[in-house]
Image (cartoon, rainbow, N blue to C red):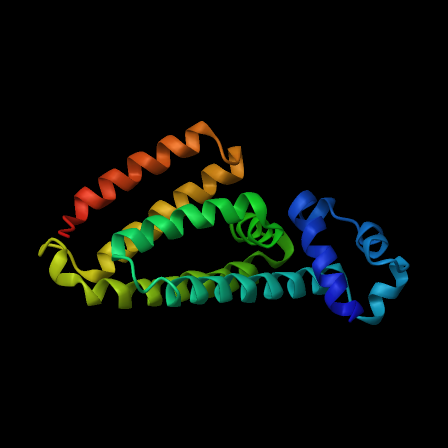
Length: 193
């Protein structure tokens, strides 16, 4: 039980302060143990960080699965718009999402390659789900586009919005970028109701 509590406390500290700024003492203090006791669960700060990242990644993949499996009644455009909105809200409200996005874009230098590769798991999961969704309604999209192009464009828009969230949080700039990119995306794919 303490291992999970440590991971959750670490996730919060890493989300707030980054890898370098988060201290093992603060993480231990949140759980009510001494710093040295962390080592009975994790070999190092790096090991704890990797465990927190894996935990965070599994929670985000679970969210994506649940979102799209529970959104059967909307059109693809409604699902994509709602997902974008929900993810922006999750970034503001959920430590897990903040931690994952921050570290997917700015991983600790000493484990950068490993974290980037793991981050692709989330992107690939989202790509797979979206590709299935787009293929179901491809007849409603411009005949000049392939499903993969629609999915890659959408994910690129999400990535741009994530970067804006990292820099400014939920701001007027983010709102303008979201509305403008969404309008161009919908018009660009030529979606027909």
